[in-house]
Length: 192
Image (cartoon, rainbow, N blue to C red; front, side, top):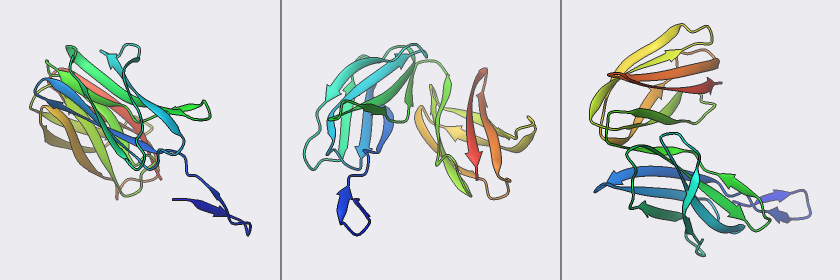
């Protein structure tokens, strides 16, 4: 959506906002992303990190006039945790990155890739990837390391989206922990 500044009627483009998702389908990684505009984008690079190593570019997608939803299939999923992000290359020469998402291929690893929105208000959504169907114990810790909220949730193999009710939490910095078996993942977020 354009923003009008002052009485001159000048319209400035809103920066490209990109949201990324991942899903394991038939032992392949399907990476999807939505953008609000492609007006200043020259290309999208799909980047992958295996088992939390360095990110490398595994593919490039060109923007198409009028399209705001894109996808890419990773036919060569590595064993373990595959992290993905989209690098947005701009006409001006600059770049920006999407959120990071995960596909866990084999094993029972866990990875929290996002708490959104962050900062949050009364409710947020947790995106957690699991290597297999399981039940995870979630704990929210305050800045002092004290648990302030705990619950369990069933997870499917792949990406899971779980609601986080924060109505009764005071404003502050928090750490979210998820544990399933011997696997653990943590994520920091802010409540306003």
